Length: 281
Ligand code: C2E
Ligand code: MG
Ligand code: MG
Ligand code: MG
Image 1: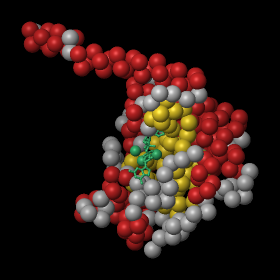
Image 2 (image 1 turned 60 degrees about the vertical axis):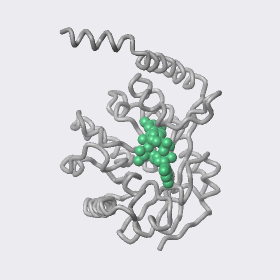
Image 3 (image 1 turned 180 degrees about the vertical axis):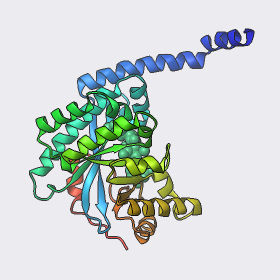
Image 4 (image 1 turned 135 degrees about the horizontal axis):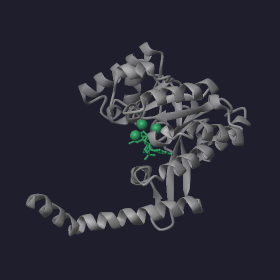
């Protein structure tokens, strides 16, 4: 009893905690304002095939902060998820990404490109998600079969049956699903088999040391083989060097994303990359 009270009393006056609470509250206000004032933007990172040809891109959100400059998503997505602001943010991202897809559709050079959008499990699980998605596709004119939704393994934590049903509905429209950061989260091969996925993304933490660490190499080889046996496309993330690329190609990976091919940048930059070919092997 005394111990509990003691701990609570201590935490109330803990200056570190006080600061964290204040920072959190300030961040919440900032994120709300940024949404209202249009201070978020999307960068696009190319996804290429084994010949180095651009197949599409992943949309990655950035916060263009008036004082702090460009802030990466790792600094605000977790907070936005905790504060219930991720719904508005992810919907904004989806809408802009679909507008971009509709633009690409008008140009022969980019008409086949797919665009992958990261989705928080919270937004995906929202009861209105399917109808929101339908509205966005209708409003923007984007082709559903050019859109990829990237989900993480946290999706498998609960309400799995609901999620599978929802994925099947969207899959029926042509939307494809990709399992992001594969191998870093809660994995169940049983669920993996049941999810209507078309793609697995090997997390960059495994790719980074693939030439140095035998365990990472084994994981990467296993994920590629797993994808192949389940009929899923496998994308390697975080490909920075020629050596990493050669390893991945040698083991059957056919889709790549990473600084070797292009950093996330504005849509215009991606168009410039489209001509830039880095052949593998
Ligand atoms: P992710 O979906 O796994 O995205 C890949 C991350 O790896 C991106 O970080 C990208 O910039 C980075 N990256 C790409 N190539 C390389 C490389 O060669 N080397 C290294 N070291 N890094 C590379 P970013 O943009 O900071 O995004 C971080 C995470 O934030 C994303 O991880 C995704 O989970 C989340 N995120 C981004 N945009 C959104 C969004 O619109 N909505 C939601 N809910 N989450 C998002
Ligand atoms: Mg992603
Ligand atoms: Mg990832
Ligand atoms: Mg990640």
